[in-house]
Structures are given as C-alpha cells and as structure tokens.
Image 1: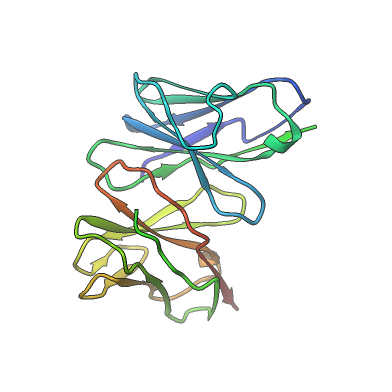
Image 2: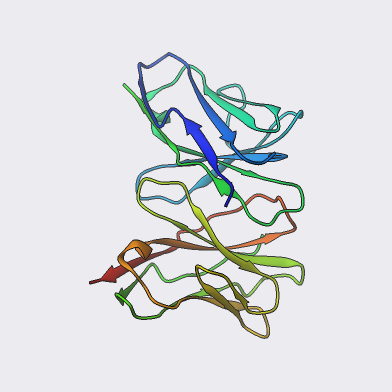
Length: 115
Length: 110
C-alpha cells in the first residue's frame, strides 16, 4: 500500500513556542490531506482538510490561527502549532488520499508534548 | 455522515475467526462502509471498504447486510498482531473525510 510519513515522530517543546509537523506521501500524489488529533484513550478527531494549492478547511472548534496548515505540493502538508500550550499536547496524525480513491493512508503520528 | 454503533470491546482466541459487528441504520444509498484499525501508538491502517456486495481482500472480509443497516468485519484467523481498535466508518464519496467513532478494542488471546 501507499506510504505516508510524518516528521518528527515525537517532539517536546516549551510553552509559547511553535512546532511544525510534516506529512509526506512517499509514493503517490495526494490531492487531499487530513489532519487529526488524538488524546489518550480517545478516538481520532478531524482537525482540518487540506487540498493541494487551496486553503485548509477547519472543523468547528479548531482555531485556524493556532493550527496553521500548508499543503503546498502534492506530496507535502505541514501543520504548525503556534504558541503551543500544555493542553495542545496530543498525538497528531495525518492522512493522505487521491481524488477518486476510497482509501486513506495514514502517517505513523507525531507525539507532541508541551511543557 | 451516518452514525455507527460498535461494541466497545471483544475477545478472540488466536487462530480462530473473529466477527466484528457494526450497526449503521441511517446509512444512505451512496454511502460507503469503511473499516480501519489502529494499533497502539500508531496511525490507523486501512482494512477494507464496500458499498453493497460482500468484499474480500488479503486482510479480511466484509459482509454487508441486505438492507445495508449493518455490516460485519471478518478476520478469518486472528493473530496476536490483529489486536487493535477497529473502526467502522460510513462516508460518502471518494477522498472524503472520515469521522471516527469509539471503535471496538479487539483482544486476541494466545
């Protein structure tokens, strides 16, 4: 199957700093990428949908100025958590898909800890 | 997207078949049924999807009720590596967002 990578796999940052997470589709072109957040022992919650070359569409309750998403190419999307706070500590997962595909390919996730 | 109902947890013995049920009574005619699974500390993994007919792939089989209001994911011979949270998701169209419910935690006993 298709491979999606995320970098970094884990990161620890201080409160008030910004962190960038990369999501790459390694062997296919992803017209759409999704960003999810998962708190311990909870399910995945969709944060935003990102189409290549377009502005991301954010889910209700997700601050677009805090979670900056860029999908500049068909193989790369980035999520920047700005002015991170301890409550932003979570497991961030991206997925990628192609127009016409019914499968989403998920990255391995990035564990963010804000101290 | 249609809401799904799954048991919180199930247990199976290793090398035995597992039937994971999912109810989706509000599914519409064009909605697809997707199954994903998530191992601990990993991103979800696609398992299978279908529309009306039963589907088979190398990982599992998907049995869809005639009225499409329920479906069953079948793992033919469970292994310890199949222990995961299994999510049944209803989504319309391709390249669409997925709404994850709470899923079923499958425990495989040696």
